[in-house]
Structure formats: structure tokens, C-alpha cells
Length: 128
Image (cartoon, rainbow, N blue to C red; front, side, top):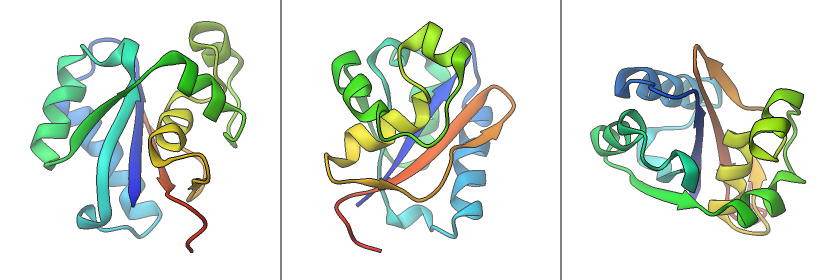
């Protein structure tokens, strides 16, 4: 299972979110059909652009609670002081992907940034 974790600024459009997810998929040579779901912090769950992008991409959207984000955040590879101050984790996209993919999940690489959206891909378990 691969999870696309998404972080964003307020008011992003579905097109911006889709473009970031597609960019991350391209960077890490993953096909959309290999992605099981999209994850974002519960606090961002009401963002219409994120919800619409998940629908457009045919992905279930999982809202990750803050405690799970913080627990997974320790495994993030990217660190933003601004994001730590705002959200309590070093990378929202990476923490969301890792949390939704499970305790033994790993990132495919650092988050992908495109404008106001970040996307990170995490794989369940220890599979290559």
C-alpha cells in the first residue's frame, strides 16, 4: 500500500493539490493505481481543494488526528521550523503519509513541493 500525504496552505484548489500529487508520483515513479489513499491532517480535512482532489483522483481521503501526526512526525525526513510552529510536526505531508500507512511505513523520499501544496509518498511495511 502506498499513501499520498498532503499538506497545504489554506484555500488551495483541487488543481493545485492534484498537480502536487501527480508531481510526487512522477518523481518517485509511482503509478496512481498503486496509491491506496490520500491522507491529510484532520485540521485540513475541511479544505474543499483537498477533498475535491481526492475525489478527482479516485482516492479515499483519510483525516489523520493530531496525535497520530505527531507520533509519525519523528520519522519525517524533512524539517520545517515554520511547520513545527504551526502544526507541531516537521513535515505535514510526510507525517500524514507515514501515519496513514502504518507504524512500519517508510517514505519513498522527501516531500514534493509545488506552490502551496506538499505531497509525500509512504509505503506500508518494509517492502521495497
